[in-house]
Length: 394
Image 1 (cartoon, rainbow, N blue to C red):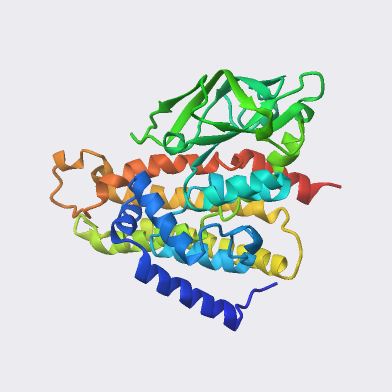
Image 2 (image 1 turned 60 degrees about the vertical axis):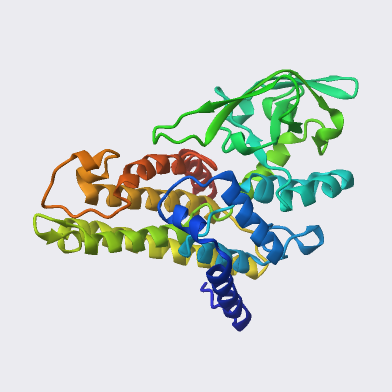
């Protein structure tokens, strides 16, 4: 099944390109292109620009403040943003909690929380993983015990991405120990200013700081902050994960990374030979490019199915699995082509046979940071199990 873009969809792509050309701040695009961490102010500034256009909550229906886009329009927007070095908006409020509240939240929760997500008043982070509950999320130990109109929360969450910028966290908590693990979990909203909540930074191998651990010690959280019903958290968690994996294959980002490698290969020489003329690098780049094209076709087939009204299936796991592998391979190729000049202190090295682009020092940190891609949003090992169960069951 192939996807032919309609005239309206092609016009929409042109509109997105024009908008990005006119409104994307230069300093934001430059930081994305160089693989640098964006400051909170830069992210919120870009969110305000998108909000003014009505394009910030891309997965939400119009009645809840979103643009009401189709899956194809979301794909077009995501791809054009990646190709033009627009930042990926933090997904926790916009792509995860928002859809959860729209489906499971009370009318009061939707009225109070959704507008504050869209305008950036509240920055949400995710409290799912724990030291002993990552891929096996049902093993989580963080407890929420009912005490009148409050829950008393004790436990720990980890790998809390961008929690240092957040003022709110949505958490999976255990509210019943007497049933099977999946049946005793609830979905709770917590203000990070609540007494008994502490966030500590985790420094990553690339030297950056984007994840945290969060501790709860007798933190009192209003029962009104429960989303859905008590012990319905596992159902909500699975629903949220379908949104977390939206565009997680990163086809637009991979396309941009491949373009960046070809620019590097044409610019960098080693032993008087351009990297582009080296048969080993040329073969590796061609293999990745073929994989990326196959991934793009698979993604378009899935989009065609959803446009025709069919539900997405195991393809989302395949896209996540292969997409993250391709992006990691591209970063490895880029770093390898630079050789020792990719080291953070490469200026101290002498190699008169190598010309080096200005962003070479970012190659190793970006490579190390991209190791996370095969873990978050459902580890690739878990995705293989999902694919196997779906495609090979009798």
